[in-house]
Image 1 (spheres, rainbow, N blue to C red):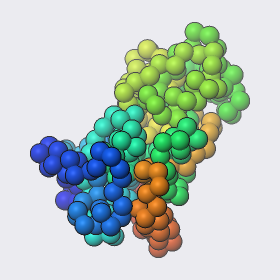
Image 2 (cartoon, one colour):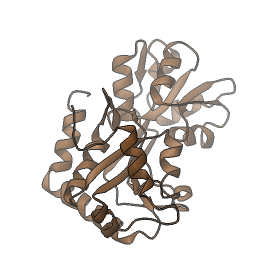
Image 3 (cartoon, helix red, strand yellow):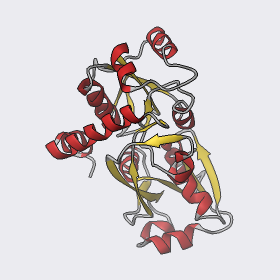
Amino acid sequence: MKSNKVAFAAFVMVGVLASCSSTGYRSLDNIKSSGTLNISTNAEFAPFEYYDGSTIVGVDADVISAFAASIGVNANIVNYDFDAALTAVPSYKVDCAIAGITKTAERERTMAFSNPYFKANQVAVVKSGSSYASLGDASSINAALNVSGTKIGCQRGTTGDGYISGTLTNATDVQYDNGALACKALSNGQVDAVIIDLEPAKLYCKNISGIAYLSSVLTEEEYAIALAKNNTTLLASINAFIATISADGTLDTILAKYFGSND
């Protein structure tokens, strides 16, 4: 799917990002006056954000592009690694970030968050023929993985990363730049399991041989849009938009577009 709502040319990004203040956020009126909403993401997280050719597409890209259109501006979605996509918000390089971001107490120290727009689950991905493949509940999965010498992959800076370091403390946390690399490492036998969100897990298990996700949910979380603290006008507008698309079926249509064939 191609979208003319998303700007990608490097010279455009440099010029537009330069318009973001280095000393403060842009209010809703500032954004409307400029004609562009600047957004950071991490396009390594299908089906939420990923590249289709040179265009960033996915659930989050569609959601934020629809929001931009609702306030009469263009969406300038810029790809960063995950950590940089988050830090771009409090440093005012962008107006907001959308990248399958879970609101946490730590993140709330530096950013504000919208109301949630998606409920997500963390699951374990394992080798199809391994002893882990028959594990049937979260406690059994945790007991089997939380063993010294076990290597568990994840995308750096994500909830999966935090789950390993916070819950599976006896295992070794092996961080990768994205979930696909972690799952490829699992397929190649470099790690014993991967902790990742369910929807990306479905896609990776479909496209990478020899791996499968366990259906038991390890954690439940909610995705939200991150923006600068005290940017109340933008926050109110985003929350109103989320309420509208949740009620009128637009959000369900976007989700079905990307999840419909991945069950």
